[in-house]
Every structure is written in structure tokens, then in C-alpha cells.
Length: 120
Image (cartoon, rainbow, N blue to C red; front, top):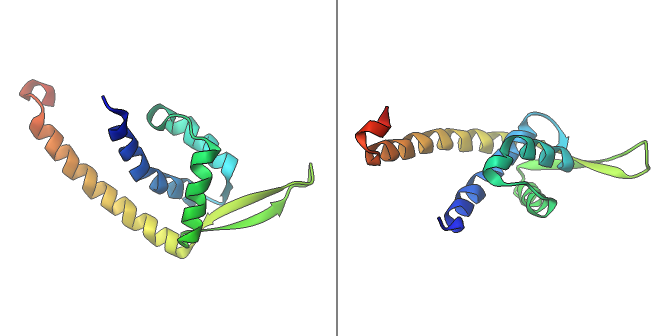
């Protein structure tokens, strides 16, 4: 199959998935990537910084997440933590509601195109 179809599905849902990960509590980029790879690598492939950070920046520019810099005590560097804004929480709720309607709709079409014995 042509990989471009799979890529469109992935792109369409990845922002929502990142919002879901951030909704669990304040987190930082490496932790987001680790969680995404632990639970989604089989579907999305391994997430990389070059994919995830631009999405985080877009979500922040849209006002859906905020960030804060926290100095790391051990090595003197700092870490950027992300959290949902109120707008982000509202948007995530809307996206989840849409996703639930969307999957019911798509599943209906899929069931209608399957051979009768495959429906069981």
C-alpha cells in the first residue's frame, strides 16, 4: 500500500495524542516522546524530536499548551515543561468528542464493505 495514506492518518491524530499525553500532567519533551514510543510506536513508528517539537511549538502558538523552564539541579541545564491551558483542555474535549463520532462513522462504512463472514 502507498504509505502516503497512512501518513495522513498519523498526521491527523498526532496533535490530539500529544494533547492527551500532556493532559495527564505537566511533562517535558523527552517524557512525551518516550510515552509515545512506548505505546504508539507500532502504529506511528518511533517518534523523533524533529517531529514532536514542531508540533509542541504549534500547540503553544495556538494557545493550547504553555511551557515553563525549570533549571535541572544535577547538571546545571534546564528542562522545558508543558501543560494544557484552559483553551487546550476545551479543545481536547472537542477533539475527543469528534474522534468518537468519527470512529463510529468510519467503522459503520468498514462493516458495510466487509464480506458477511468477516463481520463476526
